[in-house]
Length: 246
Image 1 (spheres, rainbow, N blue to C red):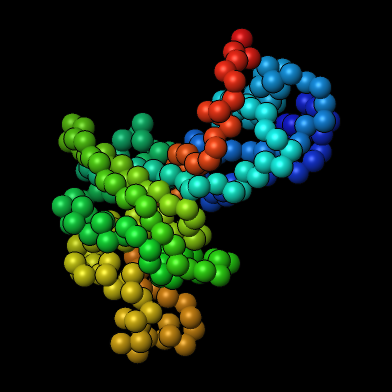
Image 2 (image 1 turned 90 degrees about the horizontal axis):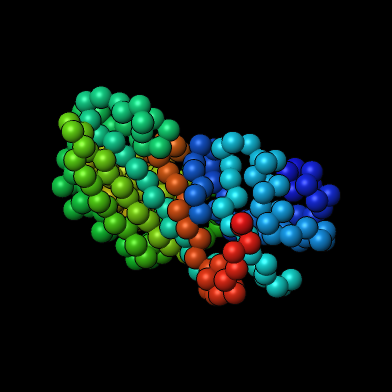
């Protein structure tokens, strides 16, 4: 917002469809603001990138109607990256979670499809989460991997309409616990049915309403990237094509 104010003098609010935790990357983040100055898109594009710090860049701009609501989107895609090897790759230091030691990828692949569909993710949110409705739908959960020398790069792609605070990082962390044999094979099923399981074993969670302890660890923030926010219609796709970035 400071860069926009310095460039145009506008001080109006800036709206975004998603907040990310500190350390999480945001390749597909969007921002919407009212512009009262007569600056061109080309000038705005160049000016903002000159004003912004080196770890933030504007890659595209488009004009939208005054009633456009960027928060009313169709969902989001996140990608979580893991590097499993006996050594830490310096090129992955800020973008991948390094997981050394034993790692059973087949166990991870076997458990992952359980996330698909609608579930009560009460065990998969941070204890400080302010969300009221813990029922969320996961429409895509894919895992791909590739061998790189003595290690393996794993990419987890997750899509859904909305997520709880740290939900994706806890989902990934729980799978890694299973892959490292730190949790039993049926652990994910128990976590996705935390309320029923807690009542069955007489857990203190039933009294407190806090079910976080029934899922696995929280994966580090730096391995997660907000890859895309889905808009329908997408103003970047429906606009009249123009080469304003010349």
